[in-house]
Length: 176
Image 1 (cartoon, one colour):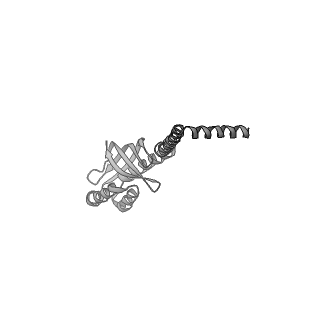
Image 2 (cartoon, one colour):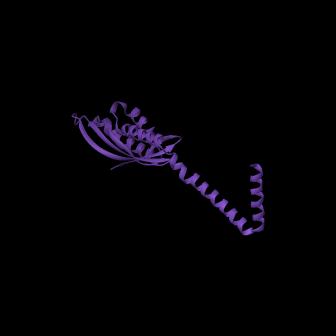
Image 3 (cartoon, helix red, strand yellow):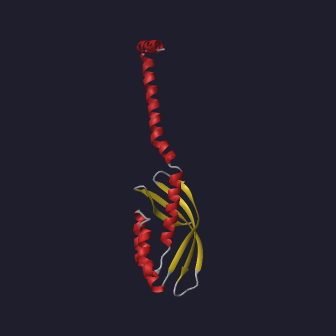
């Protein structure tokens, strides 16, 4: 068996020396196969690794973050906003800081505004290795000193997430 393999290899090497065009074609073929394997490994397989675990993690982060963003009470504002900020990243975190400082905090304190959000349904719309988009349907209940009877609203948002140090964080929050 080994002798047969050696004989075959010797014939192949002799034919390559005899025909330089065949040798060049062989080298080009091997190079094309290596390039294709590299392309598949770098472009296709990372997307295949984004599977059920990533989907569930992104979905959970979107749900938890949505509830944290939309739920607060006047007596726990600092803790509520701190919890919400832990779910945010990038420009959206900057925007949220300004919005809560300039708009929400004064209104919540002056009118005793209290909101509570519950995620009714959510689904991953797009998932990549480092980003995801989740559609979230919410019921939100709001009370205030001016309107003590709970007002309920239903809404939906498109939550964009970015993976930061293995955690999914909200990078955009757009009403739909």
